[in-house]
Image 1: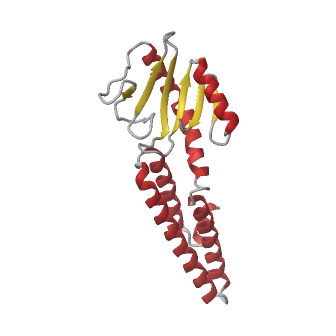
Image 2: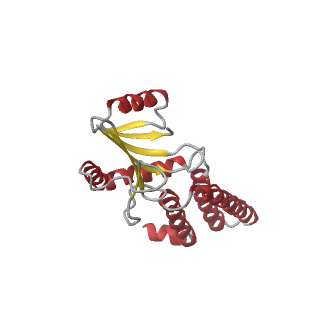
Length: 213
């Protein structure tokens, strides 16, 4: 049925476009540096605008040929949906889906890293500060923007460990998945959640998704 639909409306090229769009979303989440993401976003916006205009023109020129009009309307609908989901605000939707899948898939791996930190198998290991631990850059990547984690602990050996979802090296806020046993930090996270529940939330006991510092 799906193959017949694709064939009827000549959507092979658009199926390829959809696959590329999904891959770009995944690469944006895991690989692309933050400073090139706006350029990728802009290129996609312009590309979809061109396709929308092109499909409208072809549909109008062939308005007396129902099959061509129907094909172009279906393609136009696909373009509009992808165009909308690529906009910076709505792009939050696919990125959030990837983030939630990432959490489920990599939870046990992150939990093992927490255990290794507590057992002193992983410690801060960089020269530029005393809290960052550079993990081997290999798949699966558990902390985006370099596979680094931030390790903090107090006198009671209560740990707070940060994994990056989106890492910004300048003034823009970073997004993190944070594990914490520190009651002071937990209270701070709970307050952030009350102030901005859209961008901050408790995932499960001791685990938080936090936007900014």
